[in-house]
Structures are given as C-alpha cells and as structure tokens.
Length: 143
Image (cartoon, rainbow, N blue to C red):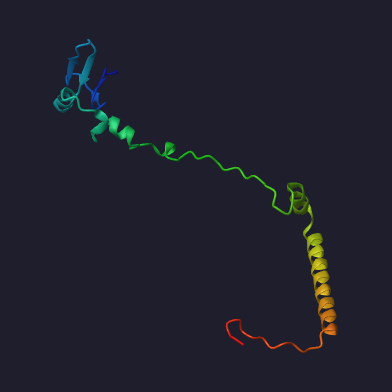
C-alpha cells in the first residue's frame, strides 16, 4: 500500500497524512507546510536556502552527496610538443626516434672532437708566447 505524501514547501521534508498544514497563497497556489516552524518561517518570508536545516541549504552547500558522485570532474591537460629555439619539432622527433646507442656514439664523437680542438689550441698557444707577462696592477691603485 502506497501512502500519499506531500513535500513541505520550506524544508522539503515529507508530510505524512494527518500532519502539516495547507496554506493557500493570494495567487491561489497551494503550499504544504510540514510544521509550525516551517509555517512561521514561511510567513516571515525567510529563504529556505539560508536556513541550515532545510534541504535547499544542504543542496546549495553540497552536503550529503553520495560517494558515487563525490569525485570531482577535472579536465585532463593535453601534452603538446613545441619546438625549441635551436631545433624544429621535426628534428626533435627524429632525435627521439633514434636508437640510444647511435645517440651515445654521436655524443662520444662530438666530445672527442672538442677535446682535440682544445688540445690543438693549447699547443698552438704555447709555441707563440714567450712566457713573460706584464705584472697585473689593480685598477684602483694610482701610479
């Protein structure tokens, strides 16, 4: 057997048969009020969303939400590859596609080349200089 219940206009609680009051507004709209508390506050024109014990306030402040709806929806950030100042996007993709052994071999070859260049510069610099340098004088000392 299904019992017909109404909803209170203020609190949105169920009103069981034999309880509550039916209030007809001036415009003719029937308003069901579950308790004298709800009736008093309605006649004072209080807003249900500002009363902590009403369902309107609980809905507004996200209280009593079930666990299934508890997870927040967030937009996933998409990763975008961008070119670096020295390299274009195609060059970066080519380098990423290369095998690690090939890249390490390239790095080793570049290091050897740099070391050889430094060695040549050092040998070249020693032959021309006579080894005598002018004494360093601080800038703030007057002569």
